[in-house]
Length: 387
Image (cartoon, rainbow, N blue to C red; front, side, top):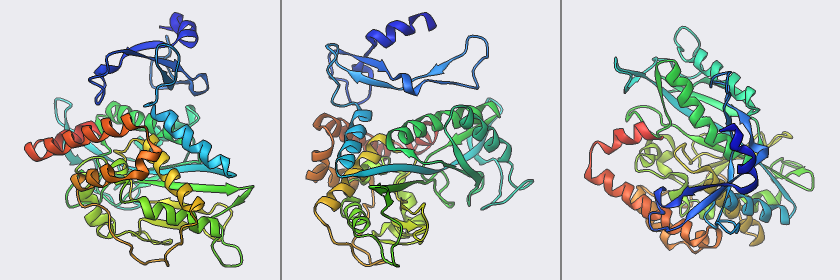
């Protein structure tokens, strides 16, 4: 309640960590310490007795930072980039489907419309829902750049203005909850599931990274050539993309999307190609950026961004040579089980993420994979939860 907020800022709020998936054996309460810079009013809640949102830092009860706090993991990755003079900003392009609900308000897999890419009304029935979402984003100072109908029936995309990596992760977390809430208020169900319809396009979450080094955009070509630092950056991500895929694509359904949307998951880079895992876009302009297209909206953005940045930093520090554009250098894992296996063997991931985060995360992913194998209904449950 509002009267308790001063105490929360001063002392934090305890919660039962053992109730969180992956931490069942944790036998002590942890503390949420609100970050006042993240306070935002939720516009869709009642005007009387308004509700605000706050993101928090997690600590032990003695005030020591909790080493499995994923926001802290991302902050540390940002500090490593800053230590070599890199300023990293991220903007996101996120897709989702709008589905109809039945007479009892339960989700179905019937798309809200049958429109296609960039269609407008009356074929595009979702434009007013997207408009409502974009206005709500603006009210919360989460700046949208554009919105449009995507290729799949009932599929939509909203793109964000770039921000620092932590703010981008916070905004994405809030965005998913907001979209689901607004869709529900319109009698619809929003799904961020990577591949909700087997024969239609999947949902992606393109991570666009804009990097400046001492004020210069490293992805902007100079004299027709890519900056050498940008080459090392790309090479680092390409080198590690397969072993971090379990964190970028965290559910079994994620791997269905690879077969149809991502050239079968082959690993390569290009200028502007829509099918390569990594591409450099607007390379002749001041807003040039690197786009990683393999992640999907089911991922934890804090871990995903931290691993992508860390892979890029490794490429820069180790001066990793960049392969020629369009050359394939392997392929992404074909299943969640394969992705988990690669992550378990990765010494790189263990250098970036705390041991308890890795162990808890991969243990949960193994449970997810096992449930998927054992229960045909698991696919629809993922549709409901991502989800």
